[in-house]
Image (cartoon, rainbow, N blue to C red; front, side, top):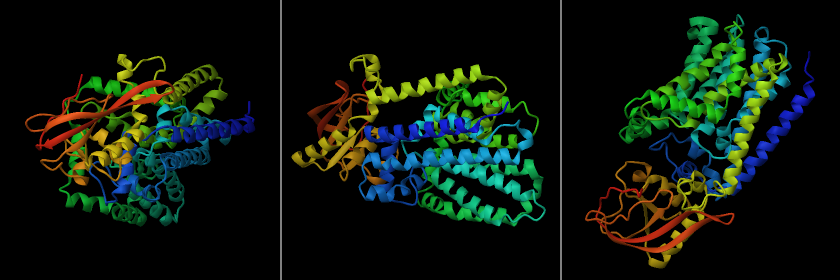
Length: 502
């Protein structure tokens, strides 16, 4: 039985266009998340690097931020990166079918590309990265680019007299940009020599282009090294502690794996499982782009923790091979389980979009336990709160804004700009570099948010007194989903340990 390629191509185009429209709409509906606001502030404070991440996520949006684009238009950047990442995955699928045709049963390229795109579209976390610009969004483009160049290098090395210099140069640029995007890009880069050695042995180390590639990558990441040297390596120290801190527990690893299966789905697992029935090593070497980073992230999750979106580029590296596997399984008649799993993942995505639109579970009151822990409330109301802070600052002639946790500082510093925001806790973070410490004896406007409420920062070493100036509820479709309190606090003494309200 042979595929009619036309329906698969039409289904793929329709699904991708629908996803683009959804991303565009939510890009204008939702306020910036804590991480999005933090990286947008990178663009306001351009530097060679930053406390918690390399600089590319700030550099790439520097001009739009300087031109004062709205949040909806700023999100055109991650939306475009998401689409480019998908197109690169489709190109990898096509290239795999060309280079390793003997490893795959007969299927059309368009059928395989459809299943690759469906894996991309039905992974809920991918839509988060398709709307919010994070360092991992950059890797959605850079990691598939690494894979595609690696495949082209294999093709060149298959020739007796390979002319591969331009491939090595391009790979050096991609590796350098990856190092400017996120430190964990190194995990993915390790898969490149793994693949090339598997295909061509150690003779790849005799290629002069390899050393040109490494030199180019080193030049690209030199600003990060220089910045860290000037700042006593604080970023490297922070990342090492962030990844390894805490007692290692197997339970944490198991929870991490369960979260991965929910956020990326079983469809990709089914496609890989079908492909693994083949004995050919060739395309299986590319699994290093998944296994190396995933194993490392899983291990670190047992100690310092690991967030679900950190592994997104690793899962995307699996998508082309899994897409081909799903196309083979579908042609072989394994359609029930493929359809069932795809339907479940589609329902999860629809549920996620629905909750985002309504601002959480519609029937839950803000006083209900779920209402107080509503994660969707994090995306609404911050712009209005920032404007109110600016009004109160002008009204009371207070130039200092303060919060008791850095996650509150990012949104407030973005929406109340150009006012300066100080973080009152003892944790060292990027705001210590941007704002420094709140001057002793100062008065400040302090923001408190119901979803992360703190006791008033009044003590012998904190503020002398605080009074509530205003309260502002966050409304979404006729419901109150959160609340902001604006405090005027006087005479800062220089030290406090913020206390969360249970």
